[in-house]
Length: 543
Image 1 (spheres, rainbow, N blue to C red):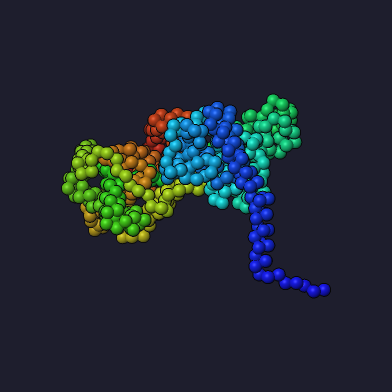
Image 2 (cartoon, helix red, strand yellow):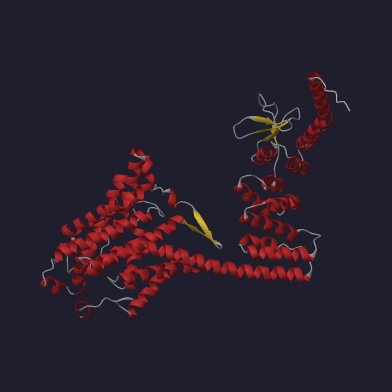
C-alpha cells in the first residue's frame, strides 16, 4: 500500500481548521458557562433585595471565577456597588474599580453608583461563601481560617465543598478542624439520620473546646432521644474538660505571676534578711531597671536598629549596674546613719522613693513608655485548650536563672559566706574580721541590682511608668514575710504559692478582694509562725 505524503502547507491548513472547529464547539460554551453565573449574580445584586443578594453570593461562590473572592470580600467591606446603568463593580485593595462580570479594570468609576446593602443574614452568607472559596486555598493559614468560618456558620451549603476539602487535605490539624465543621453541620441540620448525628456528636466531643458546645446545644427537636442524650453527655464531658483546663491555665498564670513576684522579692529578701532594713524605695529600683531597658532600646532604635533583638541582653547587665550603684549610694549616704532605728529608716527610704519617682517624671514624663519585645519573645503556642505566650515562658525561666544564680553566689563565693555570717550573728562576724559595713553596702547594692533585673522583666508585661514599682512593693513584702525573712527558698515557695492562690481567688472574689483575702491570711499565719515558712537559724536569730 502506497502512502501519500501531504505538503507542509496542507498540514498547516488542516491543523488550523481543526483548531477553529474545536474553538467553535467548546470556546463559546465555556465562556458562556463562566459568564452566565456572573451575569446572573450581577442582575441579582442590582435588584437591591436581601434575598436576591444572598442568591447572588451563592452564584459567585459556585462560579469559580477569579474575581469571585475579591467581590465577596468587597461586599463584606461595603465596596461593592451598582451603577445607574445596572453595572455591578467593586473597588479592590489598591483602589481600582473592577467590573464584576468581566473582571476588567474600569477606566473610571461609573456614575450613580450605590453600595449593595448588607444585613446579618447577608454577613452570614458572606462568611459561608468565603469559607467555601478558601477551603482548598494553597495557603494553609487560609484553609484553617476557612474551616473555622464554616464551623461557626454551620451552613449546609458548604457541606459538599467541605467534604471535597477533607479528601484533599494533607495537614492533619486542618483536617480535624474541617471534620469538626462537617460534624457541626450534620449535628444541627434537619432531616439527618440518628446514626449520622451520633457520629457527628462524637467528633464534636473529641474537639472538646468551648466552640463545640454551640452545635451540641442546637440539636434539632426532630432528633431521637438517644441523640439528645448523647449530646447532653458530650456537653457534660466538655464542661468537665474545660474546668480542668481552666484550672491548669490558672495554675500557669499563677506561676507566671509568682515568677514576677520572685524577681521583685529576691532583692528585698536579701536586704531585709541581712540588714533588717525596711526599704520602701525597693519598688523604685524595679522602676529604674525598667527605664534602663527603655533608654537602651531607644538608643538602639536610633543608632543601631539591627541590634534590637539583643536589646534585652544588653539591658540586663546595664539595669543591674545602674540600680545596684544607686542602692550602694543610698546605703552609704543615708541608711548607714540610721541602723538600729527602723522607723526612721522606713520614713527615709519612703522619702527617697518619692524623690526617685518625681525625678523620673521630670526626665521621662508621667506617661507610659513603650518597651518592645524581641522576636523570640513574641507569639504563643497551644497546649491542650490553653495558649501560652513565649514572653511569659522566658520570664519564668529568667526568674529561675536569677534565683539559682543568687543562691550560688550566697553558697559558693566569699561575699556570700560573709553575708551569711553577718545574717546569723553580726557581732561574731565583726569579731572575726569581717568588715560588716562593706558587707552591708554590697548587700544593699546586690538587692537593688536584682530589683533592676526585675524591672527588665516587668518592662515586657507591664506599663513602664514612674508608678511601676508601687504596684509590686506590697506584694514583695508579703512574699518575704510569708516565706521567711532572708530565706531564698522560702521566698521561692512563697512567691509561687501567693501567685497561684491569687489567680485562683480572682475568678471568685475579684482582683482587689483576692489580695485582701491573701493579706488577711498572711496576718493570721504570722500570728502562728512569726518567722514565716522557713525561718533562719542562728544564735542572733534565736535570741
